[in-house]
Amino acid sequence: MWEDMAAAAQTSNWQDPRLGQHATATALTNITRGLYADKANGLVTKGRPKNTPTVSSVEPPSAPMKVIVADCGDDSNWQHYRADNGQPANDGPSGRRQINAVVERQGDGAWRVTDFGIHQVGSC
Image (tube, rainbow, N blue to C red):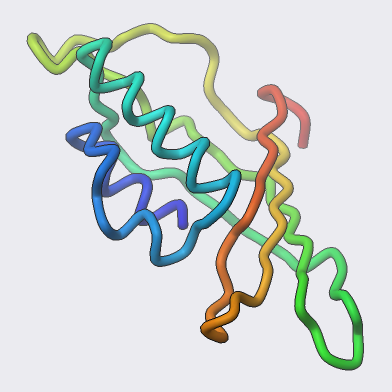
């Protein structure tokens, strides 16, 4: 999901079809809204996030349909820039932060992120 978002964020393409390959529901809504706002504000994102996800829990253990994933993501090298002049947008601190995600098996058998939460820098 993050790789799809990073690719779309290079041009703030909130309609990139890759976004729905690994995200749905609230997760997809939040990603597309964020990219739409970036586009409207003349921002693009350069670089890539670093993620090291681990499985926190599986429900139910015998036949998983939902997985909770924990991550200490690092967005130090994934920053907003002004699309018109390439200058940094200076939109706040970056660094390592706790990310929690819900990943659920869909009707088509695919696993997609349905929701995620990103905490403040320094939370992990």
